[in-house]
Amino acid sequence: MIKFIYFDVGGVVIRDFSGTNKWEELKAGMGIKPEQAEAFNEIFDKYEPEVCVGRDVETLVPMLREKLGLQLPENYLFLQDFVSRFEKNESIWPVIKKVKDKYKIGLLTNMYPNMLDAIYKANLMPAVAWNIVIDSSIEKVRKPQTEIFQLAQDRSEFKGEEILFVDNGAKHVDAAKAFGWQGFVYDPTNTEKSNEDLEAILL
Image 1 (cartoon, helix red, strand yellow):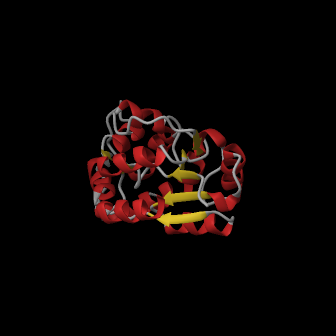
Image 2: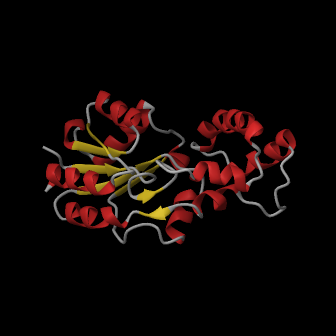
């Protein structure tokens, strides 16, 4: 029986880049030419795991300026560029509010330092009090590492089979299931169907 639900933030509680062309828009806005895309991706993919466990994402900006010759404004902020492209997913808000009456709920999310605060300041999150928040940049461990699920389970004080994890990343849901949790893959390109399916399971 489910007693606790952990929600991912990006791609579930809010609309991030998932299922959109916003990543390409961000790169174009930074002045990255098509022939530089691979080099940019290599740099970003190399360092993003470190960013998710506490490295300041702004430390990548000088590297990108140097290696790709980007003419970014002196006051350019990578974090702000990301968050300014996020949107609310108001379609899930009623679901979250309904399930909170029946279950304890929390956030389990891979975040860059200060990103969750920026998302809240941008007024993108529902007005709900989460019982627990597991932010990778604070905890210094990220999905899909086993340690983050152990930490989240310990904080919840529930058994693995009593926890449902809602994430838009199948590999993260698979990792949660392998750890003994229940899982639900949320489709950010079809939020209405995902919300209906989630309600059918929980309400």
